[in-house]
Length: 331
Ligand code: KG4
Ligand code: ZN
Image (cartoon, rainbow, N blue to C red; front, top):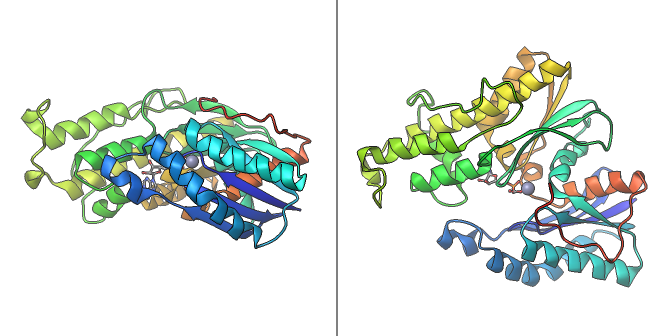
C-alpha cells in the first residue's frame, strides 16, 4: 500500500510517498531565507510560500508512484499554512477518489520511529521536542498515544531559538547553537535545570532562557542592544545546549525507569541535536533502555512521518472525508 503524506504545519512544504515502510520519495522544501530577516516564522509569508511550492512538490512525489491513501496534517499548526496542505490533499483525494485521513503532527513525530529498522515495539515512551512543543508520550500499544508531560512554558526548540537570538546567532536557532557549541566548554556556565528534580513529567525552559539573558547582558539587562563583543558566545551556547539536553534526557530516562518501560523514542526537530542524541544514548544504555532515534531528516518536519501515522490510522479503520478541517490549537 502506498501512502501520500502532506505536511504544511509550519514553514516546510513537505510531501512524501511511502510504500509500507519504504520511503519512495520525500520532498521537504524549506523557507529559511524568507523568514530569516524577521528572526522567526511569519505565518502569512509561510502560507503564501506553501501555495507556490505545493504543486511542484506534489508532482515530484507523485512521479515516484501512485498513492492508495492520502494522509495530511490537519492539527496543530499555523492556520494559514495548514489550510494550504489540507486543500491540496482534499483536491487530490476528490480528483482521484482516494481515501483521506487527517493526522496529528506531534503523533506523527512519534510515528517517524516506525520507519526505522527495526522499529520500536510498544510499550515505549517517546520524547518529542520541537519548535512549539515538548511532550512525553506513552505508547502502551500500537496506535495509542497518551500524554505524560509537557512544557509549562517555552518549548525546548523555542528555547534554542531564543538563546540563539540573544547570542547573535542566525535563525533557525537550534542548528546555530549546536554549531557554536562545538567551540565551547559545556561546563563553562552553571545554568539552571528547571523542573529537573520535580516529580512530574513536565518541563520548563523559560528560566533557562532568562538565565542566559542575564549572562549575555550582565548589569545592562532591560536595556536595548547587547554588546556581544565581550560575550563568550561558544561557552554560553555549549552550556545552554548541555542544560537542555540534561533536563530532557534525565526526565525521559527517569520516566521510563519509573514505569518499567525498556524502550525510548526521540523525535521532533530538537532530536536532530547531536549532544541530545549522544547524552540520550549514554544515559539510556546505563539504565538498560533501548533508544530509537530517527536520522535528523526524519526528526525535523517531513511528510514521511505523516504518511507513517496516516497508515497506522487507516489500519485501525480511521477515515476522514472532504469536510476535514484544520484545528490549529489541537492538544
Ligand atoms: O519539529 P520541527 O522541525 O518543527 C516543529 O514542528 O516545530 O522543530 C523545529 C525546531 C526549531 O526550534 C529548531 O531550532 C530546532 O527544532 N532544531 C534544533 C536542531 N535542529 C532543529 N535544535 C537543536 N539542535 C539542532 N540540531
Ligand atoms: Zn514538527
